[in-house]
Image (cartoon, one colour):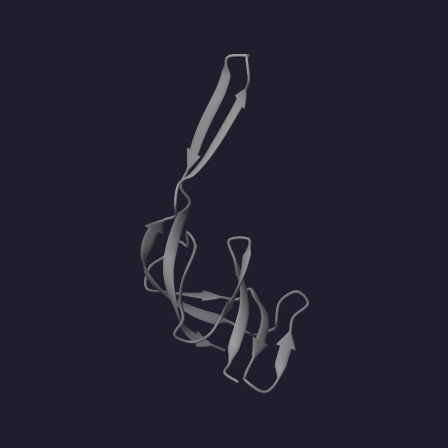
Length: 102
């Protein structure tokens, strides 16, 4: 089994492996970013689970660029009352690649 880590960023948790590309909520910075909010780390044979984070563990992410998620539309209407409300939202995302798990 290969090494993996469970990280937390943007209020969400992701299971990542080295070389994996994913989109996370917007991260500040350029080049590489180190995340210390690692919830669990596995080296392929043993698993370390943090309370809530694993001491000394970090994941290095390379920032590939920015993106926007699909638009989410919130529409409310009250029948026969003349009330309609439409709000749209596009979440800002950052494309990253996992470089190292330590």
